[in-house]
Length: 171
Image 1 (cartoon, rainbow, N blue to C red):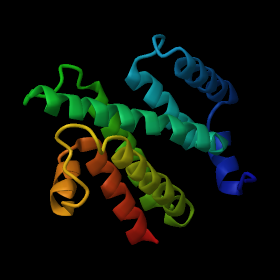
Image 2 (image 1 turned 30 degrees about the horizontal axis):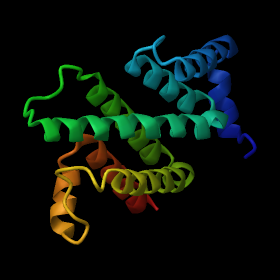
Image 3 (image 1 turned 90 degrees about the vertical axis):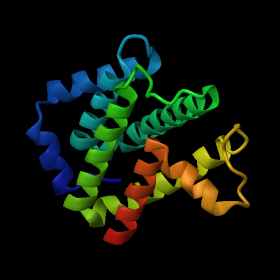
């Protein structure tokens, strides 16, 4: 997809060295996860999504892994019977940051972002539901009401459902 004048303006608003540094940070952090915290890598991805539209595919792919990890942690907490949140709350903060940015995109430019984010979020919800359908505590798909209630208690899937709903409403 060719850069539009809107995208060009966004890119020009950031110093090209700053963008290059974030690209390097994101690529290095994604390859060597130990170098950056989960939150730093997500912040880098969000920065790139905002300032370098051509990075969209890579950033959204990374965000899929963040949501996948959040769902996995949530299900592990349920399986182990832990009722208190994980001591590592940075994942919840990252999900919230991602949610805020994506909903901001939908609100500010629904024509451009709603179809992209809608497709991404619905596909990701399907993948997560499929990947984790056999985990203990996940209701059988034939019990749709229970299954929906289950996924609505997970902050990551609840955020994705809300994002998808906002996209559909905006379109």
